[in-house]
Length: 115
Length: 116
Image 1 (cartoon, one colour):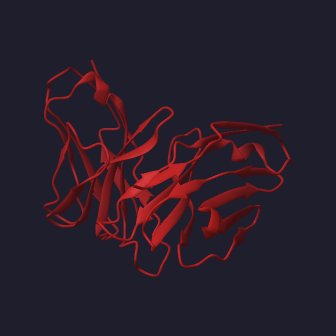
Image 2 (cartoon, chains in turn blue, orange):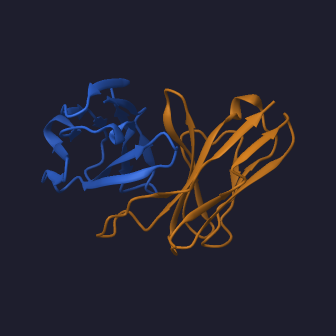
């Protein structure tokens, strides 16, 4: 069975601190796709990144970086020098490559960034 | 503008009164999906559709129906709503995830449903 675990329910940091959001997944598929989404207080869901299971290259986009480690089934997300605008709920998700591309989301991590 | 639209955005109804939440996308996406979001549970997939006339159950399909008669539309039907279906519902669309581009799911703005 597939599962996505975001063990951190809430994280609170002070502006300019670095913060890492953890994501651990379970799947028996050899090919799958991992995603991170952001849900700001306004409620919409915003795509951040997609990673294919066969591509373990880490990625950096401005203050955001992602560490994909297949050996530990983890896809962690780091925000460097956090800002108040980063306050949001962040979701990790896994989509299968078989069975119609079913998608499983983690429960989300709520990040508070205080000024 | 590329978008996923949902209607209505807010709905308060009573137990047993059939309702439909519409979802439409203008990006010619093959894949569409419905999720419900509940506190502490993240988003849970209700139904998804790979293409016209092809639908499949997600993790929480009980009490819901869908249809995909046209590529752009994917309505969610609650034949006999119950209070435990009170939730925030999101529709999403994307191109096939195995295609070699970004393939994020584009989400609609959400429909907040309350069943009394």
